[in-house]
Amino acid sequence: MKFLDHLEEWIIASLMGAATLVVFVAVVHRYLSGLPIPGLQDWLITINTSWAQELCIYMFVWMAKFGAAYGVRTGIHVGIDVIINRLDTPWRNKFIVFGLLAGATFTAIVGTLGANFVWHMAQTDQTSSDLEVPMWLVYLAVPLGSYLMCFRFIQVAVHFVRTGELPKHDHGHVEGLEDEIAAAKGGAA
Image 1 (cartoon, helix red, strand yellow):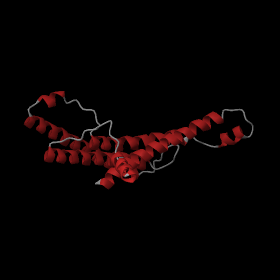
Image 2 (cartoon, helix red, strand yellow):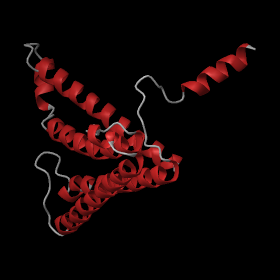
Image 3 (cartoon, rainbow, N blue to C red):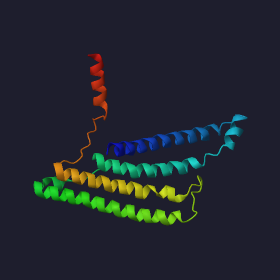
């Protein structure tokens, strides 16, 4: 399970970093190609960066789908649970499990419909306008992200049934910091 956790985090971080780099390069290119510097301006105008915006949109879609699954796993999704928290514990637990299973069902349906759409899209020759990549690759984010989110809902539900605990995001916690502190203390001793 740790492998999937790290893969999910790696995908999100890589897409975020790559999108930032692509936007930076496109903005610098646009700025520099507007400067009246002979030679440099002519050379920059020959470089086509019209694909940058489309690529960033696609990367943000993939980032959002995998980020939603990460949010379920870590408990960072916004929820309105004022009424649920006022219920007696047995009723509260039933409503929480119902909500988690409803989320799993919904994301399974979206994933299945998305997979069907991607399958039919793959039978066509449709490509994106600037990148000219097959559109089924772009839309593959929907079933993959939805099925991963469904898995995360089930994972949280099973954990809740076993322990009675939901994932809670601590904004002050930095993952991996304990290892760094222990290594620093071990090296200093």
